[in-house]
Length: 189
Image 1: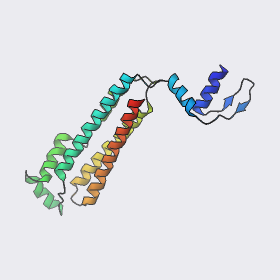
Image 2: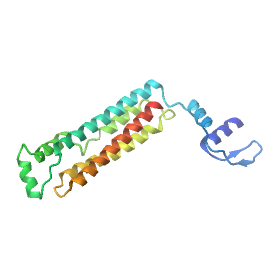
Image 3: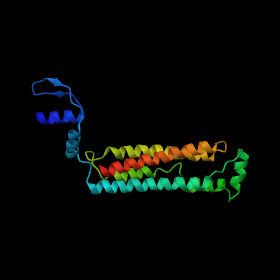
Image 4: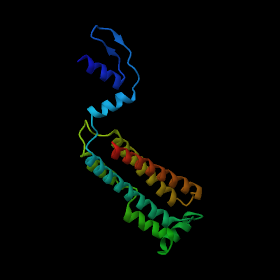
């Protein structure tokens, strides 16, 4: 039992109590303790990690596709004022009209499919085997979805400069890259 208390103290960084009642500070976490922790607390089978990775990356691809479709439509189209934007939206061949159609049909501002993907991937794990990265993924995808919505609004706003649109798009791209790294961490355990 003393060995277990000592081991858990090493892993979790708490103070150790020896069998003689002496409180001793724990040592920093080292690679041996981490590898022993992984052996005691598995992060799911390789098949479960791979299946979760597939679900998470498919959802990232879904959002990336929606984002890239919108970027291709909006391009460099800027309007001097709101009246010009309204006229452009009435012209079905304009970027403004196509972007309006895109928003209505792709619904990028309200697409919450990442939550379904998270639930589907998370079912592969127990509380003991769930990798921390899966929680990071859902958090990062939540930020990405908010940033995607923000990008749509910046792209629609006729007062936005191209620099504003580009900066908003860059943020979405960074969010997707971060979520991809989280998915890889889930895959690797």
